[in-house]
Image (cartoon, rainbow, N blue to C red; front, side):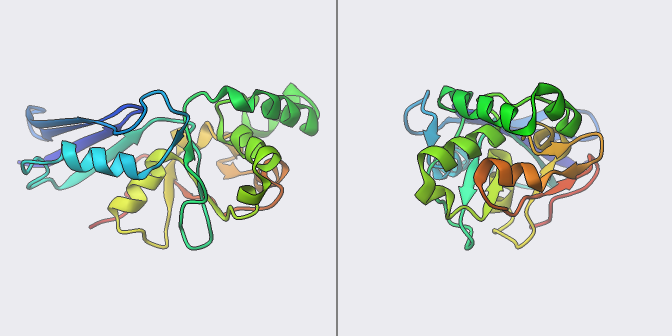
Length: 214
């Protein structure tokens, strides 16, 4: 019998489901809300780890051979060159970046130009728009940003012990506003357009690739 776990860190809680791979039977479950303000758009990522730890109490993950991690999409976790947090993560459909998103659309030459570049047009909730908002409203923080992750990328990185390799998946990457599903590559020029400089981005894994082992 194989034992695997699914870990979902949503905007408000962590849920863990442990299953038997042979039968699909649910063996154990865990749940814990995130501490802090439920509807906040600026969030300390450490609250996700605290919630995860609480959800995993009681030996829920004992014997687990593989874990799949999902989390809220379109969040922005800005990190410095040492992997430290520059500021709280920007999460949810943050309306503060509406003007920034419109600026980006115009800067590249319109909606069609964006659709051709990455298959989508920037919206306020996307990481690319949040980067532009950060550059325009918090330039001192923006200048320190050296790496950019999304919430589930950051969680996986933490669970693996913060290795040099940082990863994401195609689904998450396709919503950033700077990765093209058509070409399977990042558009670092769009990161620079938004942030004002380049930043390290996570490796995009295929559906059968593992982010690492512990």
